Length: 235
Image 1: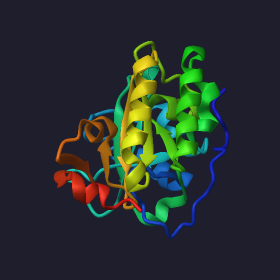
Image 2: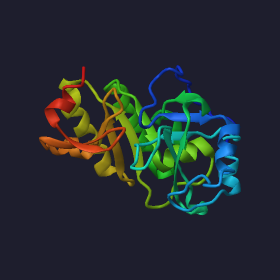
Image 3: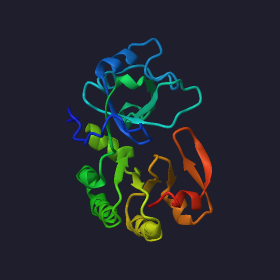
Image 4: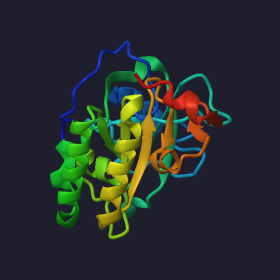
């Protein structure tokens, strides 16, 4: 059964709406968007359907996404549809006053039992790494959305997507090696990013590679940043 309410810790409303933040929107604002002539997703041409119409009423969140060319002044938000509903990615904008609450991604340790049984021991190992290195491990992608909504997002070839907080600088190399060791023995591919405090992030595999220049995903795009500058953001 889909969840009626999100069991998420709420953050203070004044926190910046960074990438990977989850937001609940006021149902009336969402219904107004669905009912607008442009529909909820003018980019893809997907019209409103019952799943989308009821999204906010069910207490399901949207996620703060990267701003795209053509976006206006609203808050850029998105949600992925599950495979049974076409697996489309919905991109919308809403005014800040449409946002009811702001939440972190669900913690990895919280969602393990939602994963396929063959994943769970490996996810527990990853949760232990998060604890050992004192970093938040927030889950997005199929596993995160399956836990948040109760809908089926995961399939046989699904990855697990985790947003890791940037560890302390002197522990980063050991942290990345620990992720690689779990990834090498796991049945699922470990994907995701290491995020600095402002929400900008680098794919963990790229950090592991030792490249001196990194593709940094920010709120407005992707840019090249030096490894030294990114790691220097760690405490």
